[in-house]
Image 1 (spheres, rainbow, N blue to C red):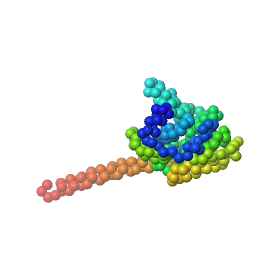
Image 2: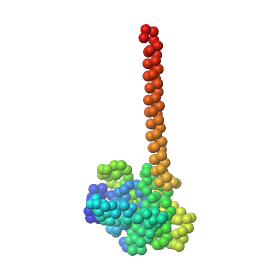
Image 3: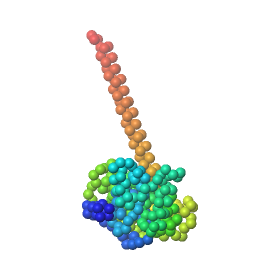
Image 4: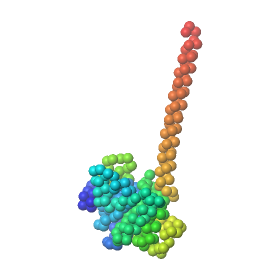
Length: 259
């Protein structure tokens, strides 16, 4: 996949990279990145010599049929790891367990602390569960990463990508071994996550929003729904007003002398 997908991406888009020296040549490390586009999980591994394992929902790997098998082969090839979300605590616990297993093998584990893609290009509050717990459970260094302009290449809803140069900035590794054994302390988890997000913000230059991206997406969806309903109500009211006006004009026409 590095030769085919990775090589094609680098040839077509020519991504620029800063800070490659901060990624260790061997040993476990966590790559914590902002998340602007679906393509983030492809551009970042493409510029690294080592394999990066991200997590993906298990449905990508167990869909039946030829298409399902091809999809599973593709996601496995680009380093995606299936996570079964059917457990008691869902994807969160499955993701943590998977991340720990990857790091215990001495590999690179990629994670998006925001938990989902940014809805508007801004940087949102990191979720304290996955990133901090995996880091404290393993002692692996956390390397902040900033993806630049990837959302402009393929915005949500667009099928054909725009040919332009995205960027990747990789920061210095962060050491949180001073907190090892405290992965169940919510204040420590919050502090670790906020420190990582601050470094990502400095690298990316994004505006920081102190709320979760999932909450913002709900607000956007609710606002869109309210706007749609308001538009529908306005059209209904207009149609009713026109109907009433037409009725009045018809009545007035009948009352005219000689009619």
